[in-house]
Length: 162
Image (cartoon, rainbow, N blue to C red; front, top):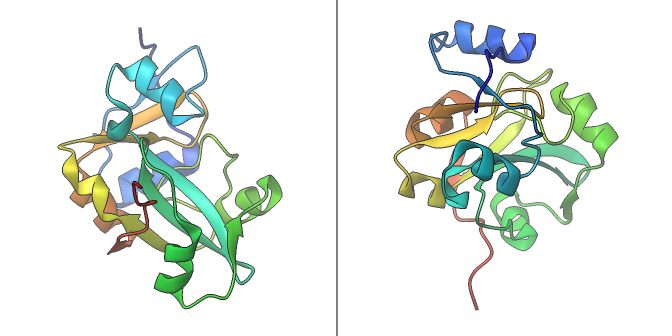
């Protein structure tokens, strides 16, 4: 069940600035911090969630957009970025770079511009749901639209199934 919802103010401003002010925002009383929590609350499959994950590539924060059912292969990210080392960013780095806490990071509307990669697997969905700036709010968007507004480069960075 959803409640009347508002996105984080910075994210709501980004939606408006991008001409997406009419995008539906859903709020849930339980957290939607993880892809599994969000999928359960929304009632969609795990790959219908878009995760906005911050990594550090040679100490530079970068954003990777990945479907909720997949994991990021940091070696593939490093190859895409020409980086020596890629690792998951700390909570402090995530907040400093994006202005949001882990579990609520949206795919755009950050404090600072981030190099952004979007895994090609996102395009397998008609709609994906992303965080709307808080651990309790989400929004739907067509993957191609989301990727375009995030300024992301489309790549293959999901772990390969072995």
